Length: 395
Image (cartoon, rainbow, N blue to C red; front, side, top):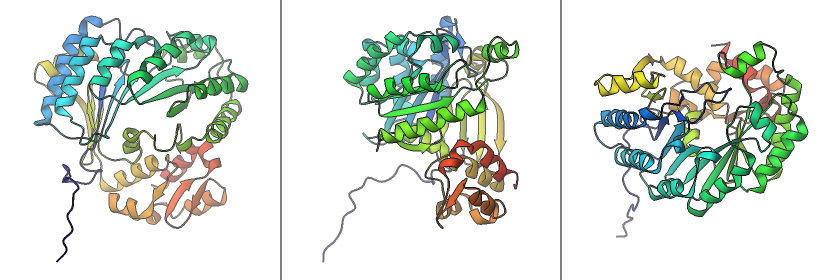
């Protein structure tokens, strides 16, 4: 009798990915400078707290009880590569122990800035298996970097890319469009400059004015004038045309990747699946419960080292609310919402929830429906927030 043998290793996961995390985010808040548009949990000028923070972060990781295998890890900030090489090594040792990747092909990403990266730091990252660096370039033009209150100079981008390329297989660029005074030709120049480096992935974000930030205050005082919506829309449409023509997949509203180079970590978020989160300001979503850590670095350190929870907000979502949230996140993906997967994940029929607005949004050319999947059309991507808002209004 012939017997077939399953050579695949047993899965370390007992629950589906929307209940048991397959991915982990770790937040490093430290920066040399707090950029004027940034509303993240950031600590500038507090280098004396780094060692205590790493101690607290490691202690928070121990709340896992035992090492928890994951498919992807992402270290964000802040500027994680602002840390010194020994500090980076201390961080990476803790992460490697408590959050081991389940396979050699696992994704391990870190955010960086051109001015904070050097060959010595890249060597430490590579030693611990980091295989993807997300470079916060934002622009290749000095005047726009100045408007955005960035600290690096365009001349620092090439050395940073070269350092990464020598030891790490993939890098991504983050770019911002819609900067005050920016023209469509300026934006085209940034895209052209980015493509010349042949990155695996490019994220493009329209500039937002978060309330309370220095950039928002400057706008309120009339010290700068925001671009109008038509100008921003033209830049976004040009982005889609330019990057798709260059061979990139437009796989999420703001994200483009070469085939096979999507951010697997962020795809978990957009699928509204579970994830771990550690560090100041970090969020986690496990088995329908969403928690958020305190945003103050000193308070985070004080709480964790005192044996207290750093969580300040916790919400247990009802199944129906979870289903609507899944609609809002999955529609951002160009893969859209697949009916069968949606039902498996949420227990709800997609058609039952969006039956009322769906026909009109299709008639307006904002959504497409092939019978198995509902997606934003190309036109719909340009007004995605409005489409999602309209759907949620029928909640």
